[in-house]
Image 1 (cartoon, rainbow, N blue to C red):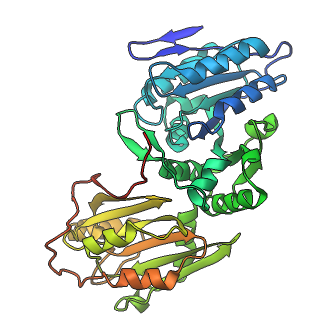
Image 2 (cartoon, helix red, strand yellow):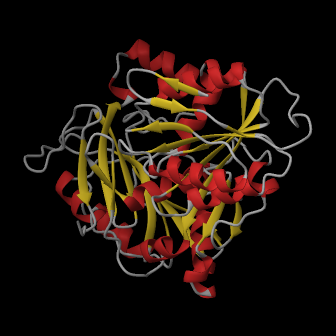
Image 3 (cartoon, helix red, strand yellow):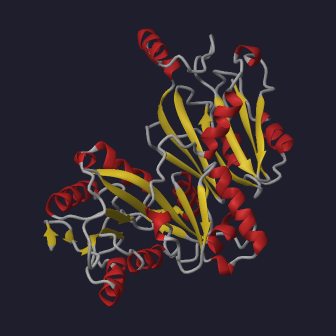
Length: 426
């Protein structure tokens, strides 16, 4: 059966068991979102799943960037040999952004017109699985589907090279609009949203390297299920089981939450000595840098754009001199680092709006003079020289309101400043 529209062609096939009734009598059909970087082995894992599905009837949707959906062809070719059937195909776009409407239409119509036990969505290598999964809980599809799990397939060799001291990353992921983003940032985001991480290509890394990779994965997504494999051979029951926990912590958020407990803002309101530590987890350490003072933009760019290799992940809020009304966010993953302009600090809003917001958010860390303005950064990594990093950042602190003539950042919401990007072989 096939669906078509003016923008994207949908080819829908169901991988059906030879005998037996549907295993899923529930109204809500479980959905597994399969993500991972380009070349990590998602399609190989999917083909293994389909050839080992047993008596399950599985619908598959494949999204690949480009006008020719290579992944769909590979899955369809394998299925013709093994179990018959085919794929729902979304091409020339990314389902975590521009193809959301197409995806929603396809899955709703699929549930209405066909009977199957489980839907597997293979996102493209440049998709973040989180937004894809949210479609199934925030749109028309929510009435027909239930998110069972977000599975991220990780190329263990690539991950080790990028984050645990291998060869420097020299690749980027190309977005649908032709722009690029460092692969390290996407790798981190895909792990941070996962319910199950599949460390694929286990045969290409040593025991020591896989242990370090596991440590980094654990600190990025505390408590996540991890399975090591070669050629995508993972137990089907484990892949399709109900894994999803929408409240599971992302590593950097967990560190902020742990260190904020019992933290008295007033005790540190007029000092700069405010760093907090999370417990060492599996050999990976983390700490939080907090200051109630703005950073010099040039100094912040110099320090945060050249963090030591021991820092695997850093993220947080920035109060920046010269644009003190703007709440900037900072994100670093491996060799890439960005500062992004957000909305205004709550403290800059009219007083009645501040009061309303504070009543609705009693947990807001509020200072009587500076409100919510602050620099708050989480650093996660191996053997970070915390003292040196803190001292270097402190050297670039400014008095609130101090004039800044150079290095000012853009203030338009969403504007981005690239502080560090990996060298890329094209």
